Length: 327
Ligand code: NAI
Image (cartoon, rainbow, N blue to C red; front, top):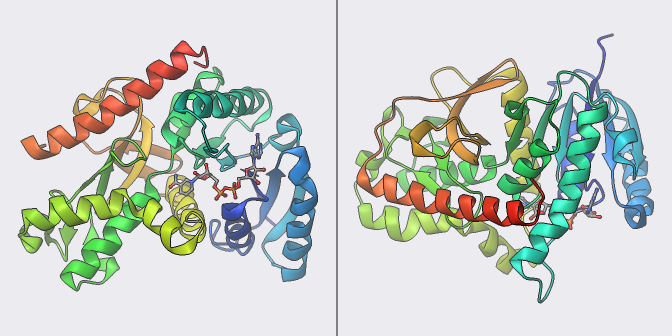
């Protein structure tokens, strides 16, 4: 039988973990090929994680080749081909942005160093934990032997949300929506772009033909969906975040669809005026574990302003973590 794909998940006892692990174990990433899970948690959450592993056992998933849990990143990341960094410090009451950045900085510094030391040569690292773009930047900066292109932050949930909203507006099936793009930061400043998206092969902005809807409904609905979920559900999006984490990893490892692209936050090479080195979301195509930014899209004045605003926020975050000495 083939060698299992070794996949690490951090924050495995958390909300997203509770959905993500079962989908991974059932073969949603590997298409049923064997997968070995390596689950990282902080010490106080290990007991809860043991309970989750009992449930994984009880599913008797044919594709689950093994599970290991622990609180030491150097042990858990040993030989992993994929690391899904989900665990992060949420913003607590009275916590300033600087406190949040330094709490997460400590986590992603240590995890970047551990990955650098023990991960497999072909490792890919997907960051879901917030602030995802900047956490990816911190991890990459602390893993000098891993190419920066191997780090990505999750904007696939935003991408999927944008597809869903556009499908609902136009009455199209989600499978008819292609070429969606999220630009910038995974935050309220993100820019979901309808001007290059297509509905059944036709330009989405033209199909919608309602700039007021784009500006006053579509963009804020996608960008603030996380808050709307918290408001309705009483806790933050978890199953959809897990699903997007798998979509992103699957496309990265096994390739995005022909004649389409996906959104991923990756290290900028200066494309579309995004300063080199920032981890920003772009339209990308992926093949065999590599991504490339789609080139040559025309950016109109409206889109330019939105992209620049989100990129400015990413620059602020980078400056803040630079000042804290995290990168
Ligand atoms: P949660 O609080 O339920 O779980 C987080 C888990 O991470 C906890 O079990 C905690 O013990 C663990 N953890 C904390 N520090 C750790 C460390 N150093 N090593 C290993 N594990 C550690 O949170 P939830 O709902 O699962 O969300 C996780 C993260 O994902 C949050 O940062 C959240 O903001 C983010 N998120 C990102 C989305 C995206 O689209 N990029 C969407 C939704 C959530």
